[in-house]
Length: 67
Image 1: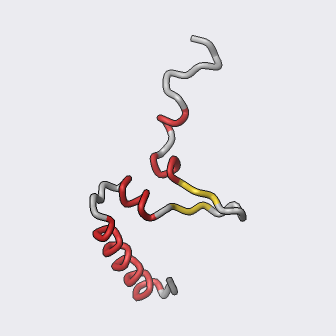
Image 2: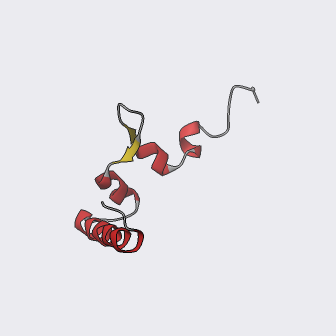
Image 3: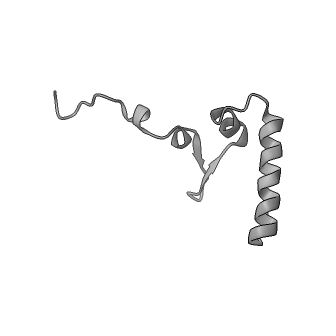
């Protein structure tokens, strides 16, 4: 096999989360919630949205984070 070739293309080896990651003009990474929900297997976005509300509430209560 040639040194420059690989059995698996880089895209197949990277995390699916890395594949949907976005980067803003300041270099900060972020994820689109609808793409993230679909990747995580949520058929209905509102189910994922309800989960994120619960997580935000927990982070505010338990960790003192202002989300």
